[in-house]
Image (cartoon, rainbow, N blue to C red; front, top):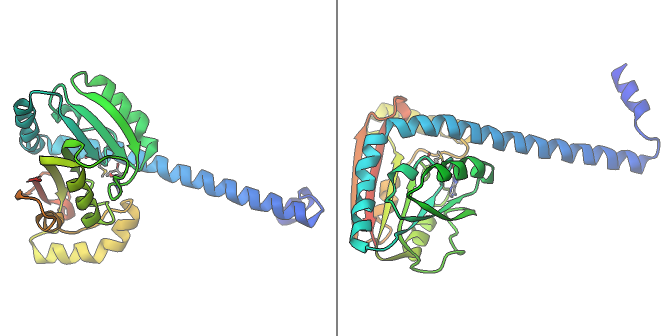
Length: 247
Ligand SMILES: C[S@@+](CC[C@H](N)C(=O)[O-])C[C@H]1O[C@@H](n2cnc3c(N)ncnc32)[C@H](O)[C@@H]1O
């Protein structure tokens, strides 16, 4: 009944039919993609907000290095954030800093800029839609510091990203990061490996791996890295790592 009704609604000319079906298919794909991206923004808003609250004390300690460096500089600090998401990190930045934010998810830009407008101490220098693996829109040695939180787990090519980070940092510049890492408990680590394909799909590209290993072999002159437990409740995300590398 329904197929016949649909058939009667379709135009008679085969070419027009094909064009109509193709354009409806393309429209459905576009709408599906938009819905997926908005789902991602919703997930970021809820989960990253929650993670930020859980990691607040630890982040304060990590970002203290930026505050100290800003004081030494005596001029506005140029900072680049990779994977800026919904803008949970403004509150940790030194007052007077100029922040450039980069993220491939342009759909989160509205929430990010609203967070920026609430933070009077930091100037938003630019918002760039792009991937951390390709920072070619920034000249060499253009930032005093680069940082990312919960982003290295989603970056596809970490070594390429770190090469780019070193290129855009000024000599002596700082790279700060915080992320989840592989568990030190063999059973949990085995589960992390086992669920990786599903996790990758539902977690919008999130991997279980050892970001600290990539940072230590990226050619920084100094790396201070520490692992810690328990900030996030979920067993698979319990083991975390943060650190500061100096160019
Ligand atoms: C889990 S969220 C973390 C967001 C924010 N940094 C935070 O701590 O709440 C990961 C972010 O990385 C972004 N992202 C994914 N792949 C990326 C890539 N290759 N380069 C830069 N950012 C990326 C995502 O769009 C998302 O905003």
